[in-house]
Amino acid sequence: MFSPCTRHLFLSSQLRRLQSTLIIAEHNNEVLTPVTQNTLNAAKKIGGEVSVLVAGTKCGPAAEAIAKANGVSKILVAESDAFKGFTPESLTPLILATQKQFNFTHILAPATAFGKALLPRVAAKLDVSPITDIIGVKDANTFIRTIYAGNAVLTLEAKDAIKVITVRGTAFTAEPLEGGSAAVDKAPEGNYKTDLVEWISQELTKSDRPELTSAKNIVSGGRGLKSGDNFKLLYDLADKLNAAVGASRAAVDAGFVPNDLQIGQTGKIVAPNLYIAVGISGAIQHLADMKDSKTIVAINKDPEAPIFQVSDLGLVADLFKAVPELTSKL
Image 1 (spheres, rainbow, N blue to C red):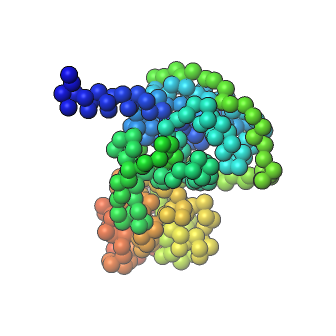
Image 2: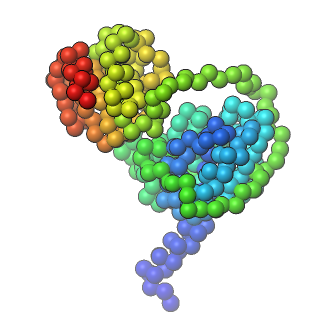
Image 3: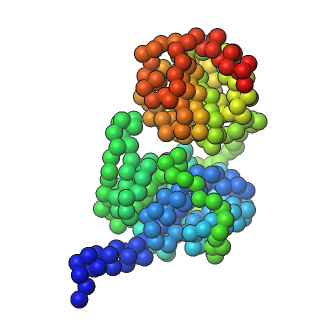
């Protein structure tokens, strides 16, 4: 007879073997988006077998890259013109067909614009509650996420048989694309073309600076800069630090910079090694999605600005004097 402790460990081991996770890879057909590697880390914490679905028009290179990651057992590839633009309307039927064939216990995607548009639709079709923006995994049924714009942390136990989850990439380490050799198979075939939407075109912003969500250093500006022309102060500083440039919603709403620079609850989630906040008061929606940065430096003339509550280093000063001086000393 097993002791209660031994029986519990045996059952836990058996349950972990029964877990199976499908990751929806985010990519541009040629290169994986780095947050897919963070999502893989979350999947490995859940336990069990991990498969990755790579769908696109000519996505062979992306599939080959994720197949090299350690801990991935299978790559499912779907290539079709129907997936041009990676619209959720075309990808959802593919995911449902894949789920029907393989019966995964968990379906994961990054908590990006891609994942947030896709997985709620999948969850609705499966008649389960989506679990969004997790920052931790306790076990296969229990997850951690923030609520109230990051002011509270919730531990959630999911009761649904299929868990549909988006993963906050900044909360998990990126798994390296090495050490593995997963088998590559075809995903379930079908007619995934949809009349609901038509992909027309895409205009991508080109920049020599690092991409905002994966940059190691970020210089971010707020309404305190007073105009878009004054963002040149931040670009000069960013050039010295090989940093990306971001902005608060207030600066974007004021028309200082385009919205692809916006950081915060309605913008991008970042967690760089160094985050320099210039002229940003620190609204709760902004703090929620940058406070995981390793080192936060704040420059603001208002000593009562909320940004100083989360900063590691704070400088109460006129940014128009402090930033040029800092740039000149680098």
